[in-house]
Length: 95
Image 1 (tube, rainbow, N blue to C red):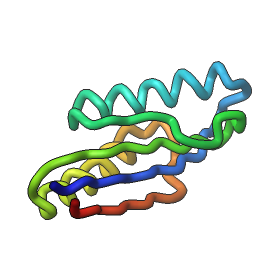
Image 2 (spheres, helix red, strand yellow; image 1 turned 45 degrees about the vertical axis):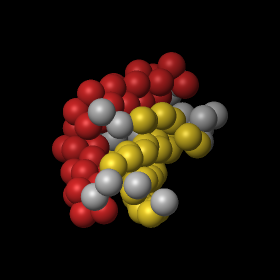
Image 3 (cartoon, rainbow, N blue to C red; image 1 turned 180 degrees about the horizontal axis):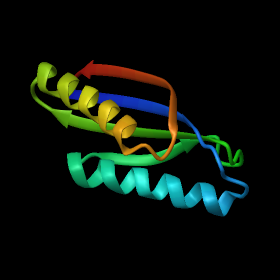
Image 4 (tube, helix red, strand yellow; image 1 turned 90 degrees about the vertical axis):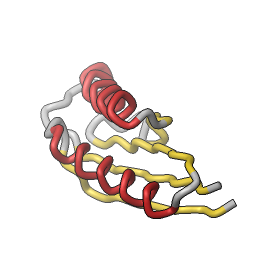
Protein backbone atom coordinates (compact mmCIF):
# COMPACT_ATOMS: atom_id res chain seq x y z
CA UNK A 1 0.00 0.00 0.00
CA UNK A 2 1.25 3.46 -0.89
CA UNK A 3 0.10 6.66 0.81
CA UNK A 4 0.82 10.08 -0.67
CA UNK A 5 0.61 13.23 1.42
CA UNK A 6 0.82 16.81 0.17
CA UNK A 7 0.64 20.26 1.69
CA UNK A 8 0.07 23.43 -0.31
CA UNK A 9 0.69 26.86 1.21
CA UNK A 10 -1.22 29.72 -0.38
CA UNK A 11 -0.95 33.51 -0.14
CA UNK A 12 -4.39 35.10 -0.34
CA UNK A 13 -4.80 38.58 -1.74
CA UNK A 14 -7.82 40.84 -1.29
CA UNK A 15 -9.00 39.06 1.84
CA UNK A 16 -9.82 41.32 4.72
CA UNK A 17 -11.53 38.83 7.02
CA UNK A 18 -11.62 35.17 7.95
CA UNK A 19 -14.99 34.94 6.21
CA UNK A 20 -13.40 35.96 2.89
CA UNK A 21 -10.59 33.48 3.46
CA UNK A 22 -13.04 30.69 4.22
CA UNK A 23 -14.86 31.29 0.92
CA UNK A 24 -11.65 30.93 -1.11
CA UNK A 25 -10.36 27.93 0.87
CA UNK A 26 -13.68 26.08 0.58
CA UNK A 27 -13.69 26.61 -3.20
CA UNK A 28 -10.15 25.23 -3.57
CA UNK A 29 -10.89 22.26 -1.31
CA UNK A 30 -14.10 21.40 -3.17
CA UNK A 31 -12.39 21.49 -6.59
CA UNK A 32 -9.51 19.27 -5.46
CA UNK A 33 -11.76 16.84 -3.58
CA UNK A 34 -14.19 16.43 -6.48
CA UNK A 35 -11.54 16.13 -9.18
CA UNK A 36 -9.26 13.60 -7.48
CA UNK A 37 -11.43 11.82 -4.89
CA UNK A 38 -8.85 12.68 -2.23
CA UNK A 39 -9.06 13.63 1.42
CA UNK A 40 -8.51 17.40 1.49
CA UNK A 41 -8.66 19.82 4.45
CA UNK A 42 -7.28 23.08 5.75
CA UNK A 43 -4.46 22.03 8.05
CA UNK A 44 -2.72 25.21 9.19
CA UNK A 45 -2.69 28.99 9.47
CA UNK A 46 -6.32 28.94 10.56
CA UNK A 47 -6.30 32.39 12.16
CA UNK A 48 -4.22 34.18 9.52
CA UNK A 49 -6.50 35.54 6.82
CA UNK A 50 -3.82 36.15 4.17
CA UNK A 51 -2.32 32.66 4.34
CA UNK A 52 -3.82 29.19 3.95
CA UNK A 53 -2.39 25.70 4.24
CA UNK A 54 -4.31 22.89 2.59
CA UNK A 55 -3.31 19.27 3.09
CA UNK A 56 -4.41 16.19 1.19
CA UNK A 57 -3.79 12.46 1.10
CA UNK A 58 -4.18 9.71 -1.46
CA UNK A 59 -3.93 5.95 -1.07
CA UNK A 60 -3.25 3.30 -3.69
CA UNK A 61 -1.01 0.44 -4.67
CA UNK A 62 1.19 2.07 -7.34
CA UNK A 63 3.86 4.58 -6.28
CA UNK A 64 4.19 6.13 -9.74
CA UNK A 65 0.42 6.70 -9.99
CA UNK A 66 0.24 8.36 -6.56
CA UNK A 67 3.21 10.59 -7.44
CA UNK A 68 1.54 11.57 -10.72
CA UNK A 69 -1.76 12.39 -9.02
CA UNK A 70 -0.04 14.54 -6.40
CA UNK A 71 1.74 16.49 -9.15
CA UNK A 72 -1.59 16.95 -10.95
CA UNK A 73 -3.20 18.20 -7.73
CA UNK A 74 -0.42 20.78 -7.33
CA UNK A 75 -0.93 21.89 -10.93
CA UNK A 76 -4.72 22.12 -10.57
CA UNK A 77 -4.41 24.16 -7.37
CA UNK A 78 -2.24 26.60 -9.32
CA UNK A 79 -4.59 26.66 -12.33
CA UNK A 80 -7.64 27.45 -10.17
CA UNK A 81 -6.11 30.89 -9.73
CA UNK A 82 -7.91 31.92 -6.54
CA UNK A 83 -4.65 32.27 -4.60
CA UNK A 84 -0.91 32.24 -5.18
CA UNK A 85 0.99 29.08 -4.26
CA UNK A 86 3.93 29.92 -2.03
CA UNK A 87 5.16 26.43 -1.12
CA UNK A 88 4.37 22.77 -1.76
CA UNK A 89 5.47 19.69 0.14
CA UNK A 90 5.02 16.06 -0.80
CA UNK A 91 5.74 12.75 0.88
CA UNK A 92 5.12 9.24 -0.35
CA UNK A 93 5.08 6.40 2.17
CA UNK A 94 5.21 2.68 1.37
CA UNK A 95 3.39 0.56 3.94
